Length: 166
Image (cartoon, rainbow, N blue to C red):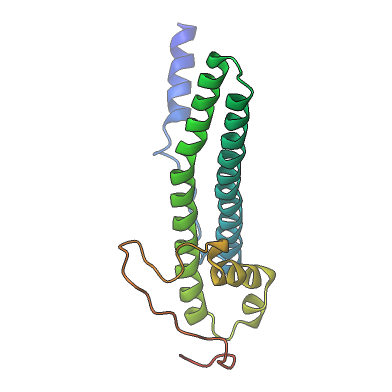
């Protein structure tokens, strides 16, 4: 009989639909969102670069193992390690590019919505986000080309005055 009461009490605690705390509708803090998106881009840029570097190092090490006539089993196992590293690159690049696109779109929206907000526009995170988006995280290969391979004409904005439209 005591077990019955325990289960009944447990079920009442787990039934979340009966008691909800009312939430205050609040506008998300744009600077906090910007910080989160910027940090995510920084992390994903580093991650993609790390995997690319790891593959190059492993390829070099594999060549060294082959030229040293190491045990064929060791070489085979290291080829598997290299293969796993190579498989990580497309996914990490995809996630990095998605985060950069998200940050770019968020910045565009923020710049429209927060025109007079000097504390946000001059914030550390705004400066960092613009720097990341400006060089697209150090991506040399896809400058001027979209996913579909379509040409993208870049608009020079270096000569524009602060707040001037292009």
